[in-house]
Structure formats: C-alpha cells, structure tokens
Picture (tube, rainbow, N blue to C red):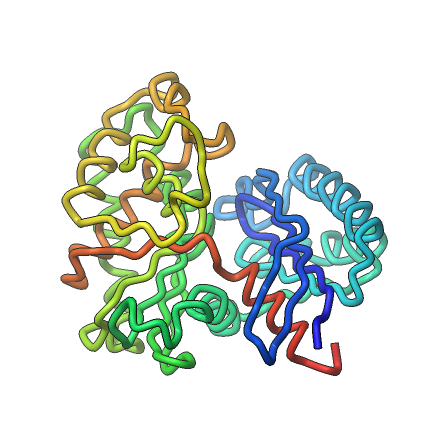
Length: 314
C-alpha cells in the first residue's frame, strides 16, 4: 500500500524536505517534492554552545515554506529529524518550540547512532539486491557538524558519529581564505583522529564499497564531473576515484572565496565550507584505503521517509 509522507532533515548547514509516495512492499519511492535551503543553523555553535537568533529565524522561515508545501500535497504523516547542531545547543528548547508551532510536529533530536541508521537505509535501500556493488557497504554521511560512519549489508551492523562536519572543520581550523598549510594540517589531524575513533567501533577494513552522502560529497562529484550546473541525475551513483577526490580537494583549498563561487555546480551556501567537506572525504578515503566512492543523492532524508512509511505508529 502506497503512503504519502513528508520527511524533514534539519542539519547544521541545511534544512531539506522530501514529500514522496512510498510503497514498502514494492520498495519504491516516488518524489513529489524534494528541496533544500541553506540556513546554517549551526552558525557559531561549536564556539558558543548556543543557536544564534538569526540562524533560528532562517530555519523557521524555511519551516513555514515547507509547511505550506506539505499541506498542499496532502502528506499523511510528517517526521522532522534534527541532527548535530540542535543536539548540542544549550537553547535547543527555543528551536523545538518554534518547529512545533509552525509544523505541528515534535522535532526529534536523534542520537548519532540513529542518524547513522537512517542515512544507511536511505543510501542503500535501492542498491540492495542489484549486484551492482560489493558488500558490506561503508556509508559515510558528511554533514555540517558531524560525520556518520555505518557498516552493513542489508542493515546496519556498526555505526559511529564523530564531530568532523564541514562547518565545524571550517570554523575550527580553516579560517583564512584560502587556508594556510598549517590550518589544513590541523584539520587533517582532527579528521584522522575522529576517523580512528570511529574505526574503533566500525570495522572499516571489512568494507568493500564506500558510499558517500550529503552535500559535500555530491558537490565534489559535480566538480569532478565538470558539470555546467548541478544535475542530480548525473551525480546519483557516480563513481569517483581517490585521485579525482584529491584533485578537487587541492583545487578547492587553494582557491579564494571568489574563485570557489565561480564554480557553476557549487551552491552559494556551500562556498565557504566546501573545502573542508572535500578534505573530510579525501582524508577518510586515504585512512580507510578505499580508493573509490559511490556517490548517493539518497541519504538520511530518504531514510526518514522510509521510517515513516514502514512504521504504522507514525
């Protein structure tokens, strides 16, 4: 039976909406509306421990827009999942109350482990059974505040979330434009240490296919493919080699803000953080020894939608 559901993923850098018709028995998901806004909810959280008033207002404005779309399309159920920034902030109650008032649902500030499980489901549901890639998968979801590592085949077997997202790494280390060698080295050391923490829980050496998710990875793919504009069809399930990722990372870290902004595939909201995102991906590939990444446009947002469609209590 097909169910029309709405999923909202509110991360550190962006807030995204998916309204879709899902049939759990057939394993099909048909998009009705999929959109994203850069709201930078996590602005300054790593430094202050609080959500900034202007960041909250940007997020609430996006919520008002999404509430209108959800109503027009007639979704039966809505699930709002909030990740790293709102999990860490002291004033998260202000965020929760605002979302509830606008959308009529309680935002779920999920744990890093649940975030990882949702990402895994969204990324691998359509790969399962195709024989197109080897398993187990190592799913890596590079967000604004954190990165999730999940190993599994038909379900997650091990997961760990660590604080090495693109916004957090930019604010913590890459403060010059372009960043200095010392800043890049400090960021790499941070990423390597966090990857080692994740590897203590997630046996990455068992992985046969690396699946990369979220805006940093898809943007790196678009740049590597030299696309004239962002094209999700061309990016979804593209395969990038480590050498391609290295080349894009080197280019981004050497570029000025204006030079990055001139890259046609790059969303304006990612211009100042994409270098850090690319560096996280490159460092993870180098540390794990996985020399290719399968890029997925389907991620935690799709996992949230599946969780609603398959849970009769939602």
